Each structure stands twice: as C-alpha cells, then as structure tokens.
Image (cartoon, rainbow, N blue to C red):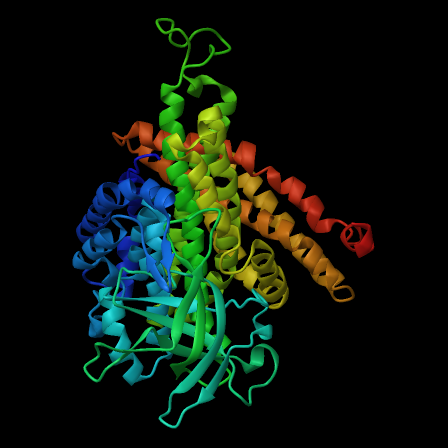
Length: 594
C-alpha cells in the first residue's frame, strides 16, 4: 500500500490562488479562518493522516471487522486512531460553536476529509457519517434533540449513521416498510430491518446515533409517507450520558469486495425507541440534508482514491526499469529505462493527475457553496442553485473516473498491481462502491438531467453556464489561453443546444431522458472539469508571467491542462452521440431476448 503524502502545496494553490478563499471566509464572517490558521489546520491534518491513518490502511483490509453475536470489533489500531482523532478535535471543525464545535466553514472540513479518505477510506467512514447526522440535526432537530445529541456527536464521543436501505428496496425508498408506532411518552416504536448500514455497529465509541427512515401508521403510500427518526443504540439518560440499551441490534456484517475495515451492518429494529425529526411524512425532505452531504463525501472518495493510486503509481513508474525509451536510452548507465519514459504510462499518470487535481478544485468550489447555503442569507438561494447542479455531476463523474484512474494504478504496476504487496488492487476494490453509494451513477444522471436541468426548464443550467461563460470571457483576453477557451466554448454551446433538443423530445417521449442521462452527465462532467483546468492554467500563466520562483509547479499545471484538453475533453464527442442517439436502440428489444 502506498505511504500517503498529503498534497499540501496543491491545497494551497486551490485555496489561495484559484478560489481566493480568504475573501470567501471573510464574506462568511469566519474571522478565525485566516490563511495562516487554515494552512496550519491542513498541515496538521496531513501529518495525522500520513503518520496515523495511512499505516492502518492495509491492516484494515487484511483483518477486516469481526462479528460475534451482535458485537463488532474493528481492525487493530482503528479504535486507538479514532481516539487520537477525537482528542485532537478534528470531528468538531465545522460544527456550530454552541454545541462544542469550532464554527469553521464546511469547506475546510472537506479538505481534512479528503486527506483522511486518501490515507484510509475504510477508517474515515466512521467519523465521516457523523457529519451528515450532525448537519441533519442542526437543520431539522428540535432544541431538545440538539442539546441531547449534538454535543456528543460534535465531540466525536458518539458517531452517527444513516439508515435507508432495506432488503427489498435500495434507492426506491417509496417501497420501504420499517414502521414507527407512537408511544404514550411521545417517542415511537421503530420496527424493521435495514441493510448496508456503513459504520452501523463498531467498538470505537460508546454510542451510535442512527438516523432512520420509517412510516407512521397512517402514512400515505410511496415517498410522501416517509418520516425521519433519531434512534440511538443506547437511549441517553437525563444527564445526556449512555443509558439503557435500545431495541436495535446488529444481525450481521457484510462480506464485501472492499473497505473491509468498515463495518457494513444489517440492523434489526425491534420496537426500538425513536424520536421524530422534522414534520411527519416529510422525512425524505429532511434526509436530503444528510444525502446531499453524503454525495459530496462520496465525490471526495473519488478524488481521494485517485490521489492515493496516483502517488503509488508515480513512485513505481519512476523506479521500475523496463525496456528503452523509443528515441534511445534515457538512462544509458542503467540496464533499462524507468517506465515513466513510455508514452502510454505517461498517459495513465497524466489521467490520474488531471482527475485528482481537477477534482480537488471542483470539490473545493462546490464546498464554498455549501458554506454559503449553510450560513443562509441573500446569497444562499443562488449558491443552492449552483450546488444543485454541481453535486450530482461531482458525485457521479468523479467516482466513475476514480474507477478508471485506480485501474490505471494497477496497469502501471503491471503484474505487481494485481497482487496485494503494492496496494493497488485494494484501492480498486475500496473505490468500486463509490459509483453506487448515495444513489448510483444512473440515479445521479437522472437527477441532473431530468429533475435539475429539464425540471427547471433549463434555468439551472443557465446559472452554471453564466458562471463558466463569464470566466471564459475574461480568459479570452489572454492570448495564451486561446488553446483552452475555444474548445471549452465549443463544448458549452453543444451542451446548451443538446439540452434544448432533449427538452423538446422529452415532451412527447420521456424515455429520451433515461436513454441520454448517463452520457449527458459525463459530457457535463468533462466540461466542468475542463473549466477548472482552464482556470488553473490561467493562474499558472499569470504566476509565470510574474516571474514566480515555482516555475516547475506552474508549468506542470499548464502541461496537465493541455493534456486534459487534448486527450480527455474530446471524450465529449462520443458522449454527444449517446445523448442524441435514438432511445429505441435501448428500448426496442424484448426483455426475453437479452
């Protein structure tokens, strides 16, 4: 397994040079989020991830979690690492101060999440899911619920989960059967079975707070009849400490393809005491607070996995000797040249670098809008509109590319990538779930095209297009940016014209949306990632023109942008055929003929 090294310089580039985060934090009123403070946070978090979490990554994969009669034991070192995490205050970074949090913007916490995920994704899921529970309670919980649960969740003394999936229903939550029957004391008796609950049972904290979807006795059918409940493993006593055991038990944990160090639990609720969060039958609306946070978190997994695979593949490519460069020996004093001289190895490394660094910029951009939406105020609506478009793209596109890039890590290693010694195959296995978590790629694609773009009659696309086209107008004034502006402008025009065409077709045939959704999402993803690479190239050109001493760093940004525009952005052409293709090619064949 590669020894993770936090890409501190790249975080600094994205924060201070690309996104002007100092101004963003000032506009939020986050006075403590100075450049020096944020740099210190990133450096210390990076050190923790390198020294504590990274060495446990292979351990978690090899040992996995152990299940014994409802009790789950995490791999060696996981519990101790979690306690260090809590003692250092990392869980509380972005939580509200009144509940013991540090009150920093969510965008800062997301950087720490990326580093933790790259160092050890299975471990990072334990505290990661708590953040969604915290956000849900902050926005929808009663004062009493907040006072009772948030201090413990914020400190990390307790962890949280989200309980949606049931044996008979995954993403189609309208089919869920878990029931909630009112008790005389204002609580509810929750009965049902939930599966695939990440971090659903473990030995790292004294209590686990489950956020559960269930139906009231008189609930309407479908998604309109779902309510949201808080169901703790142990019911807190009057002092807010662990009290009596609740009627929720872990029935088993899944044997999975990857992320062995994280317990994916089957939870059985048998008249477990729960308390309603938000209005009755509005649970899905409240749960989307958790879901949207989790979707950003899953997009982070894509970037984290790509970064770790890239670091391992790059080190190997510089060290492994095989054959000679095509134009003659690059290192005549050695028996062969390092494989990094070979064009196809460089293609794969460039792809990894383009996705890791471009995806990091995309998520940092999205995270700034998370900050604005959480704060509320006059800019929140516009920020939410942009976020509603960027989130499904980031989640689906970056995880799909992560599957590609982590497989590149295996390929660069050759046969060594297929065995456990180098850790490349573990990264692939750990990452594969990311395209399924929190709504599959197909669901994100339908959400983007059907609900967001066509559902708003194109208005939400216009909001994003205005942002992109405005910055391209500025870029076009710089002659050096011509190689990026022209192809990006072409793809934006294609995206807008295809959207109009799909909207017209969908008026008479809704299968057009389903048939085009995946290709539409990928097309939009390549355009969005291209925008960030153009912006990063623009900053790099400016720095080089100023005579900045970090010439190699900025040259690498420009060359990676050039690779992206010449070798990855053209993938849009293939997706364009898929978008405009006849849906009959997918729908006309009878089911029995497959």
